[in-house]
Amino acid sequence: MAIDTVGALPDENGKQRLIVLEHAGKIDPEDIEAYMAVGGYATCSDVLQSMTPAEVIEQIRNSGLRGRGGAGYPVGLKWSTVAKAHGSQKYIVCNGDEGDPGAFMDRSIMEADPHRVLEGMMIAAYAVGASRGYLYVRAEYPLAIKRLKHAIKQAEKHGLLGINISGTPFSLSLQVRLGAGAFVCGEETALLASIEGRRGQPRPRPPYPAESGLWGCPTLINNVETYANIVPILREGAEWFASIGTERSKGTKVFALSGRIARTGMIEVPMGTTLREIIYDIGGGIPDGRTFKAVQTGGPSGGCIPAAHIDTPVDYESLKQVGSMMGSGGMIVMDDSSCMVDVAKYFLEFCMTESCGKCVPCRVGTAQMYGLLEKISEGRASLDDLALLEDLCDMVANTSLCGLGQAAPNPVISTLRYFRDEYMAHIVDKTCPAHVCPVSRKEAVR
Amino acid sequence: MRTNTIAPPSDDKRWRIVQATMRRHGFAPDALIEALHSAQEAFGYLDDDALRYVGKSLHLPLSRVYGVATFYNLFTLKPQGEHTCVVCMGTACYIKGGPDVLKAIEDAAGVRKGETTPDKKVSLLVARCLGACALAPAVVFDGEMDGQLAPGQAASRIKEWMGDGN
Ligand SMILES: Cc1cc2nc3c(=O)[nH]c(=O)nc-3n(C[C@H](O)[C@H](O)[C@H](O)COP(=O)(O)O)c2cc1C
Ligand code: SF4
Ligand code: FES
Image 1 (cartoon, rainbow over the protein chains, first blue to last red):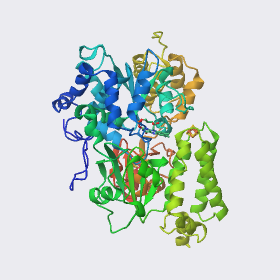
Image 2 (cartoon, rainbow over the protein chains, first blue to last red; image 1 turned 90 degrees about the vertical axis):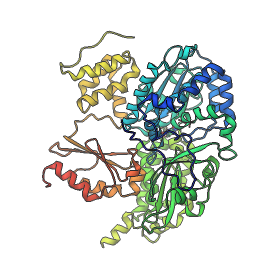
Image 3 (cartoon, each protein chain N blue to C red; image 1 turned 60 degrees about the vertical axis):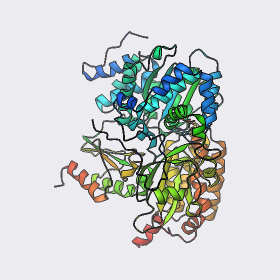
Image 4 (cartoon, chains in turn cyan, brown; image 1 turned 135 degrees about the vertical axis):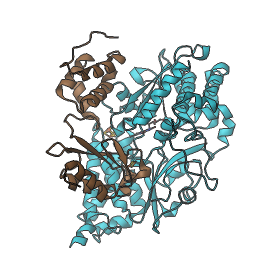
């Protein structure tokens, strides 16, 4: 069959570094032999034959790899917690829910190199002592689901999954489970509830899934891209991996570039690459003679980074410092045709609709905040409304149960921080400078 | 594993697909979402018969089945139209004119997002990122992805379906 998957955007000036995407678009993802021809499953086999689980965890810890699903939790630390947890049955889970609107890295990885994800999971399962695992993939990704299921079947046929893998005592069975269109199911405790066939509502942590996850058993949960990093680390060594990136953010990160940018698609860059390098050198800058206004990272939990901070390096801490976050890797570029009040309203509507309703601050708070933003965008708001909005940001962020509610105010906070003048224009002058909001549409009609 | 299989609500062959899905999961409670997916794929939506049948087969109370079926956005308890149109409202599509495309489609179909035309011809849905952001704004017409659409183009596809666009 034809290789219909996409790899990274062309690397014209050597800014990219392909580790996770090394095979993407280059091998047939539906053929296990193609994966093996480029060295696939050799690392897993070496690990099973010659390393103890503790040695694997040590390597991952030394590599400095942090979770690619958003929060950046150290992977080695999580693995050792699961390895130490008591329980005769342990589970391993791959988070392929990729709910951030505007992110498609995990989908591309699953579609272009499914065996790479499986091999990473096998090594992880061996390291933590898990014998069963699930890949939870959003139902909106039928091709990724099909390819993963096919890859699992092929791996089983080759004796790479199942009982006594490669003649060792290690056994592992993997299954794909479908999401059903709920953003909150990307949150780990909600995801586990969903695998159990229940409503995907988060529960308080602790206990963390590492201690009490699926059916109360210790469960390791990592993101797709996190697993895709495991093979190269063990193949090339922890020192090699740790030499890439910055002091506290190691390796590379895959981003999905989209929005008002000349070249849209996937890129993979070393941590520490600046936003300017990504947007201008790799993405080709802003088309149609327009000017760069902001780049949104981190999805509905992230923020808008303005032109003044375009030299920010992408690493977990720097992005946080400018009021956004790494998130899963969506990067949406905006030019002067976007209104920041409208963008904030867009994300709030998202969080309001996707709130699971379990706790009041998030369920009611996001709706109230949305109402206020609507008022602002229609030119009906006063400065008191703005003060109320800021109070609500604080309240919702500090009292919500899970990450969805806790981070829901971020897009509002970050746009208020950098684009307060736009809010003022809507409230005081009753105009929308970018001519997006109803307040200026009404003007135009009149 | 539980083996006592429940008889399907009718002799419609499609129930066998649903039953096979549940059997593959050993009729365990965690097969619920997979079973609902399979029923919806076979019948287009989840009616009371389907919910009851799945619940009984998996030994789950109807309240639990109904709770799950209504929690997840992809499950629908109402029959869909002959054609479905899914407009992406993910961030990349939103920034690149998704709202204008949606408006044009709503005007052409005469219904709002989430609704089906009275003649049951067209169901209009919105999605949060179809993972094709590079094609923004993206719309799926009857399962086929179409990208970089102008509002007018999108509207004429709908009018074709409605039977008055040549
Ligand atoms: C509302 C919400 C949505 C999330 N969505 C995702 C997601 O789509 N994909 C993902 O990998 N992690 C998501 N996460 C993070 C997970 O809860 C979890 O931290 C992650 O899967 C752990 O994997 P990692 O350590 O490899 O990043 C989400 C968290 C929250 C609070
Ligand atoms: S914060 Fe929101 S999504 Fe999270 S548990 Fe509370 S209501 Fe549900
Ligand atoms: S935002 Fe529309 S496809 Fe991603």
